[in-house]
Image (cartoon, rainbow, N blue to C red; front, side, top):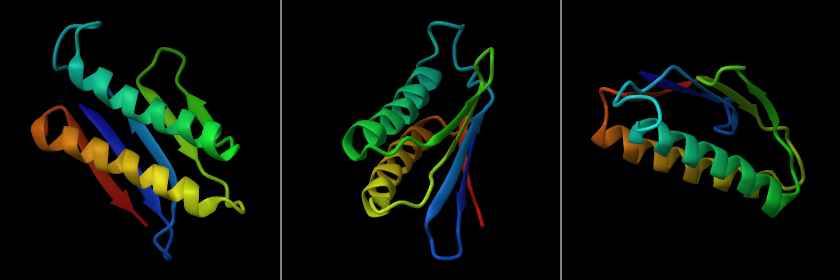
Length: 108
């Protein structure tokens, strides 16, 4: 299962998300849950960098299966947060259909 942990500050600001695990929906290379979650998260991180000029702190596992992204506070934080929230909505949409393969959690 893919676990997505979203860390919110007391203000509600999203400071970090971590994604780890494997969906195990289908064999490697044909797993649409994994592909969807990867496309959504990498697309959001790329959009943040391209549209705001802010480069989040990114940590990846060597063999896949792990991604941690931290968002520094900047003058363009409202834009970054909007894109992160859009990413979360997309991941929740995947979770609604494939709850046995992806799970989101929120922590403070």
